[in-house]
Length: 237
Image (cartoon, rainbow, N blue to C red; front, side, top):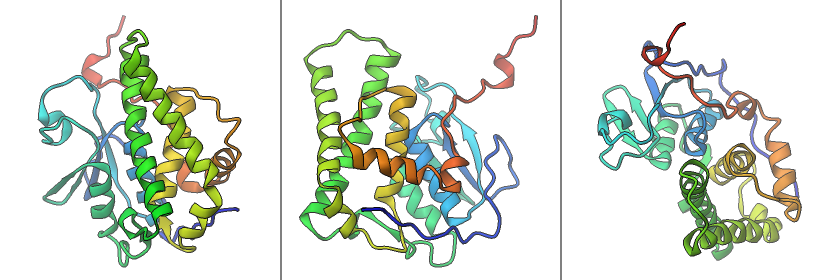
């Protein structure tokens, strides 16, 4: 079953440039982050301009690096004098910046059936586990242990469940609205080959979904990459 999203209605493509201050909306995060991409992708879908301010040091314990978030997490959204922490909060605040923006989005709490609610729960879990896997196993290069095996088992199990229940999940998502489920799932599926390669050959629905969503202008405008270091860290020889 194919998925359908509405056409982008913005009058011009959003901008995503480092340290461009004339924009009223600023996303604080990383181009390599699936949570940041979820927010950026929604901005493109809604036709909202924004500036991207990279967080260069994820090991920093200074809340200022994370737009004041004492939890030391990304992303954050600055909109005028307001600062909002967390991907989902930021997505909702972002949607409020355009007429009928919130109504154009299908939010996780609007899922009414057990199937749809469970699908949103597993996606949220898988996105969080992906962060743990990348940080502990890819970045820190920790040796496999019982905890790491459970993380990977839960990530794979969540994705397999979503694939196995794909047709039912699609039937629960309204046509003509931007489903946060779709945005988050695409960002996660694209993040896997970027940072944590997994074999998805046994998940045909997820692979087909990622291919189809990947043709959207919002997806093509927000590819994963590593942010360039700040100018003061660059050395010339």
